[in-house]
Length: 331
Image (cartoon, rainbow, N blue to C red; front, side, top):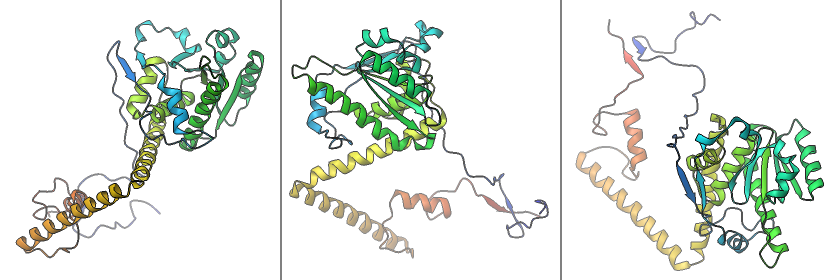
């Protein structure tokens, strides 16, 4: 059917006040502020925060506290003024125990021995197995561990971030347990084909989980350490989703810990009920004074106020709606 001949669903005498689109809206753009030249960032392990992935793979909060308690403050220093194109073929330290680089770095036996790498952790496209074979061959020659994560598609990254965090921490704890003197430390090389995209996203996710960084801080920290990394809009959206998941897991963990203290839990519930009753009572008094017919049992909070502004506007909210999608046509 010709689109021009298609009958418009808009009532007669009503026109659109702006252009419309027939496709789904685009996701919001996530802006990562550029850091100033020679910026520095310092981060600390979040051992005082509830760890979302403790209790899995024989890992406990105490294991992770012992692992990170002796870790020095991690610093990222902008070295872009010293960056050379050839550096993209090398691996750079993101943390004292975590390196990020291309798969070619995993083939550099001298580098692996010099830096004391104990695990090569590959993040590769599930459609190709070349990087998997090269990682396993290099690890076998040097006598270290190798592990990989298959990434079937970008949207599947969120479900794999937690698995990667578990694998990395499990290796670090295993190395620490193998040496009661505490002298031996685990060191990990995270790599993909280029070391600039998939593996960089996984490293950023690890910082978000274990150092309680938000999306922007994690991306900035990784970029300071390895200048050539690239975070696409899809990467940032996936990391934003992971950030929300981490926050939800931490909130659940805190609530469980609080419920272990019955009095604290009861106080929280009483406080929540008191706040709700106070807002509902205030709303009822306002409506009675204004003579409105709104349901007085409804709690009018900021979100409800936003709805009134969006769909009603005018006197109901005391504000004038700035934009109306449809207007009456003036003949």
